[in-house]
Length: 474
Image (cartoon, rainbow, N blue to C red; front, side, top):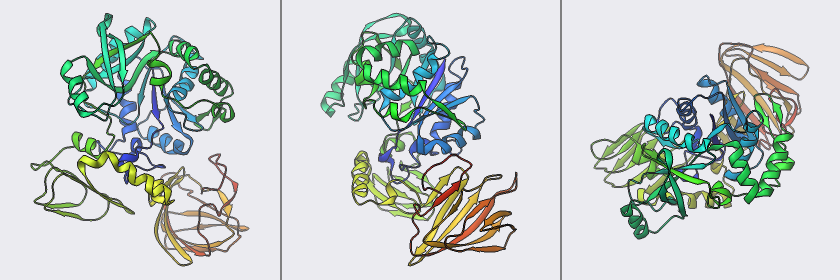
C-alpha cells in the first residue's frame, strides 16, 4: 500500500492561527509536539505494508513539509509538488501516475493531511476492509458514522451490502439543512463524507480517463516530464496547469459504478473550524479549551488560545478568543464556520496577515519582524546548522547584523568574515552579501536592523541559492 497524503489546503476557518503560508496541517493543534501532517503520516504507516508514502503539497510549502518529515525520521517519502492548486481529482491523479510507474495495481490510501482520527486501531481495521474491495477493482470511500446532525459535511447514502463490510454507494448528498441532516442521521443509512479513499492506481486512472479525460491527459504529461529537485519531485507545470479544477467526488466518485463505502467509526474530525477544534480539545470543568497563558473568570464553553500574551476573559459564554503575535480573533463559537468571511475581507484589503505570520519560515530557518517604523525595520533571524541564505543584494536598504548566538560567516562585498557573539557588521545599499551558519551543531541567531526607503521582500536580487529558489523571496 502507498499512503497518499494531500497537503494542499489552507484552513482559512482557523485564522489567525492557520494562514496561507503556514496552514493548519503544519500546526500542532491536537498534539503539542506533532503537527497534523506528522500525525497523519505516522498514522498511515501502521495501516499495512507500506513501501513508501507520497505527500502532495503546494510549491510554497515544500521546505516546511520536508522539514517536518525529517523531524519524524520519515525518509522514504516522495514529496510531490503541485505547481498550482487544481483541487483533489488532479492532485490524486499525479500521485496515481507516480505509483503506477512501479505497480499499477498498487493500492493507494488517499487522505487529507489535516484530519483527526482518535481511534487508530479502528481506522486500520476499516482500511483492511477497504483494501480487499480495492483489490477487486472498487473505488472505496469511508463513510464516517455520524455523531450528530451536522450541516457542514456532505453525506453518503449507503445502498445494498457487499463483501468485506462494504456497501454500494447509493448517492452523494451536498451539505444539508439542519432538518434534513437530522433525518439523515435518524435513518441510519447516511454517513458523513470524510474525503478518505482506497483504490488501486489503475482503477482510479481508468475511471478518471472515462469521465475526465482532460485531467487524465494533463496529469499524465505532467508526471511523464517530472524532474527531481533536491528532495522533491517537480512535475511539469505547463502541462498540469491546463487541467480542469475539480474534486474527486464530482470528477469520479459520483459518476462511477464502482464506488463502495466502508463505515468508519474512529473518532474522525476534520478540524474545519474553531468550533470543531473545541470539540476534540481537552476542556476544564466549565467546558473551556485553553492553550497558552490564559486567566478566566466566570467563563464557560469557550476556546481561548494565546500564542504570546496573557489573555484574560471575564463573564462570557460560547466564545472563541485567539491571540497571535499580529492578530486577535473574537467570535461566537457557533459562528466560527464564518471566519472565512473575515479572511475574505482581509484579502480584499491586501493585508499580509492573510498569508503570513510575523514569524516567516524559510528553508534555512526563520525570521521574525519584531519592529518597524519610518525608514527602519528590525528582524530576529535564526539560521539552522550548516544552512546559508542566498547570495543577494538590495537597491533600497542597508543592513546592520549583530550576532547574538553562535558564529556567522558573512560575505560582505569582497570580504568574507567570521562574526561571533556580540560582534557586528554593516552592509551598505547595493553590496553583495550572504549569511551562513558554519556550525554543524549550533543555531546561529542575529538581529538585523534595516534602514532605507523600502523594505519589501521583493527588493532582493538573488545571485546564488542553495535551495534552487527563483524569484525574490529571501
